[in-house]
Image (cartoon, rainbow, N blue to C red; front, side, top):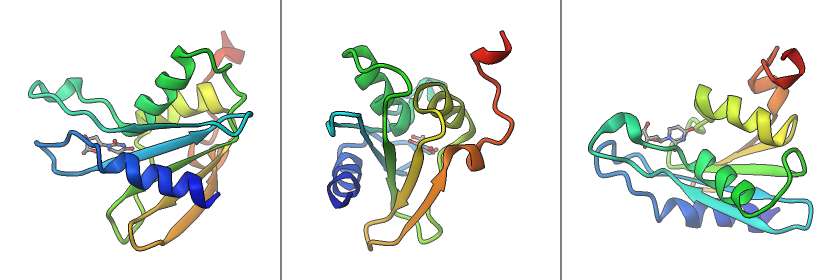
Length: 129
Ligand code: THU
């Protein structure tokens, strides 16, 4: 578990956030215990920015990890009130992680734990289509 949090904090150091200066890291553990990391990557055309969580999810999925087989995700940002995933990321996390554990962390070691269903109640997903 400590490793996952450390991986999220380390990933945060790679954030490309020259516009917001708000650096975020994410680390996801898959069913084999492998860790997939991501950081936010911003663009001068601001709307093209991608969040750390989505970078991590898409890295794993694009290399063959099966949806809904992940164990948990850690998200790191330097805020005292721990930074939760944005709304768009919650939808993506529900799609690919389902009701996984979400751990928020900051560089001072504060942590908070949630289940995805509490962060995205009544989620829309493929079961409705
Ligand atoms: N950001 C993330 O990477 N994840 C979140 O869940 C919240 C927001 C990034 C996007 C943008 O680069 C910066 O934080 C400020 O919104």
